[in-house]
Image 1 (cartoon, rainbow, N blue to C red):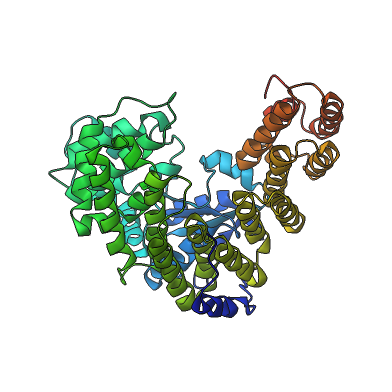
Image 2: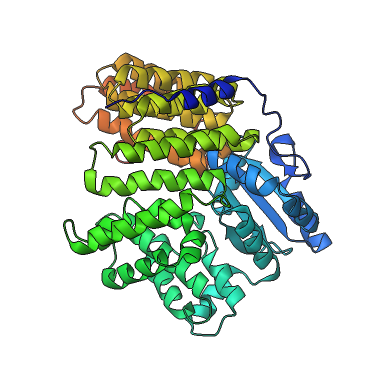
Length: 516
């Protein structure tokens, strides 16, 4: 049943509509080496070496909700601003010139990624942008005075002793954006579980985080990639975390991200262990929703996780009305109190997601529309509205919002990503509209700059995915003529690249059936 917004929420949304310009891409207080503004990454590394200072690299995008959250909760902190005087801060926006090529160089793809380097250019660690500001600062301090994660990992796996601080550094390395720099992705669950076992006595808090990450990542693996995992030991370890409020609080992000997948991974449907785990997990999440010491984002995430946890049992059916009311209350409180424009950008997306997952579709739509009206990047919220429409089966509005989002997106990498998203929606929701599909694909190809940097990083992944989708759309051969015309258009871009450049081969392979 669709519920109407409560008067309190309607009032909160009315406050959201008042336009407040976000202004600069980044909070004040730090003089970043900004690649979009002409800053040089190589010059920054040279300066770091010359001055014997670490280098802090931030890779993000102006529209990215987690990026806006880290701006609000970390980059705006006075202690971070003061700490920045001791390192060279570098900012690479995904739409900056050569940004995607730099992404390939540093093996970064997901926004945000923050990396700490030694003065000599050696990577130390990738910092976990999803944790609260205090823990981020702890991880940053440990990284600035500690050894590279790869060296610590090698020592740990060799059975050599690590200090509690070194175990903490391993636990708070951002393994989700590691991109194989320290450890291949398929090895993560087994290695993190082994590290949790080794650190349990010396550093119990680090051990708990390593174990929770291991279980969550294992639960997210597809059947063809899943490695053997001791689910009984995993269940015992997760329940121990849930039973210790301080440890559960320190692992909020793992509890939030794992709520939907971990219980079904560790327990069987209908088994007493499943019901027990769900009860204990929900009790821990309730404590976190009510914890006034946590950030607004964390509390909304915990509320959303309660819905995801409930869906382990109810599937796509309605969640209890009482839970809907509690989620609405958490969202109302968060939106009413937030002042920072970066935080509001991130929080509005989390709030809309929580409301939509709870079955409050109209209210989710209202939050997204309200933030769209005041946002410096309204195209992101149009994308949210497209996703919400698609979720409720409203194909016409899903396509309309996706098209509007693409039309208003700004920046070369962003326009490519938004255009590919609209193309994907057309292929999925309206495959018979071949003229519109071709027109959209042509528009995307027409904006590709014939430069090697265009075919790197996220750009390359997006283009390759779009090529696979177009070839799958044409699997019956009925769109051969369309694909032929698109290949001809793409060819005019590819031929302008240097003949021996690997990017030229990448470009030529994007729309071939073999590559797909």
